[in-house]
Image 1 (tube, helix red, strand yellow):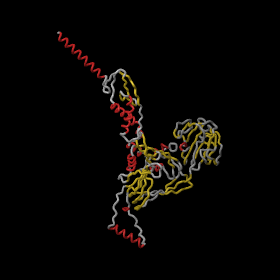
Image 2 (cartoon, rainbow, N blue to C red):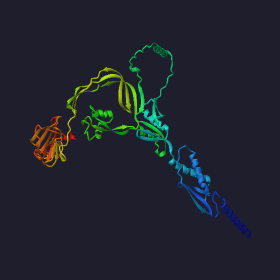
Image 3 (cartoon, rainbow, N blue to C red):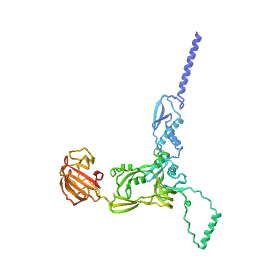
Image 4 (spheres, rainbow, N blue to C red):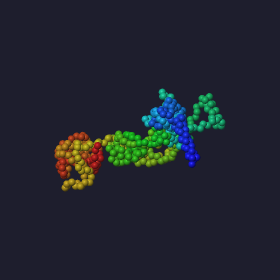
Length: 527
């Protein structure tokens, strides 16, 4: 029993000794784990709000940060801005977990690299197309954008975009040059070429005049695209920008080459019709009417020379103009022949000869802006059947305009079908009723000659004016007539006072307009 007790005592003492040695060793393992020592200092380091570790030596923190910045900067040639906020907190501890300088350095590099990505200015290129600006990462991206715009109209890729230095600018600005890729054939002096060269040389010696060249045949013309260029001025400059301001290649191509709605004003010219304008501008008639509802009521509305139409045309930011030579056989129409009649108004025209299409073979030089043909020059033409032109006689006089015959008032009965308002009144209303107090001044809607001034059945007191274009206006239910038959009046001149005479349900003006004797809605013509 005594032996067993001593053995247990020895084991207990051995265990205590081992534990003491282990704990004691922790106080001397600096930088490798736990350390001990009452009053020892450690330094907790954070960078840009991120904890990067704990060190024993606080004087090493700044040097480690400098090394981290150098290591990150050496990995790229971009222009970088490194914004770093370093915080070092000193603490006295009995023991603590510390990091190696290598681990702290790696964590610092990670934080610095993240800050650099957010603030680094990358070498990039700004492309300016008139007033439109877009930024892309590389010069090759610029070329690809421009080449894509050209290739849309050059399926054979014969034309290549080059970026060249603009020598007229004080700063380094690149502009564009589009060149055709031509395979050069080596010059030879064999066969016909040699003989032609000798003949040319001898003609120079003898002073002989070269024979006049024969007219080219259709087969002698080189067909296809002869020239391509950009409509807008393109300028490219090198810049330094953060990545957030750069546009990817695919998105840049989309923005530059995709058609965008562009507002414009079209001035109506002599001979224009809504149909022809719609065809030429590649827009529907309904769209033109919708955008010009103040001027046009429907697709049949009349347009006059000098009218301004608001239109929206789809156009890309970068437009391409090109010239091409084409051969085709076609039915063609001769240009319309107009005969001006100074006695007619511009609203009147009559066809004097119906047209008939002809047939011809043509080689033409055509100019386009994007898909729209802007000019055509016929280089060679052979007419197999002559076209007969359409001959139209048209008026040149500007027709009179019409204004509202009174100020204010409220429309109580519109033009056309209505329920009978009172006994004796018509259900087919031939004018417009405008409620207004008795004695309101009534003015001539347009200039003309008074053809009636007095009582008329149903109308009460009535004034009728015949206008130069054949239109007639009537003003009924008046209380007082201030003009006489045969009198000439001007637009806006006072002709009567409103009232409640004739078949009437209250004081108002009955305003009526007739064209060729047929009643029409006057508010379709009144401005």
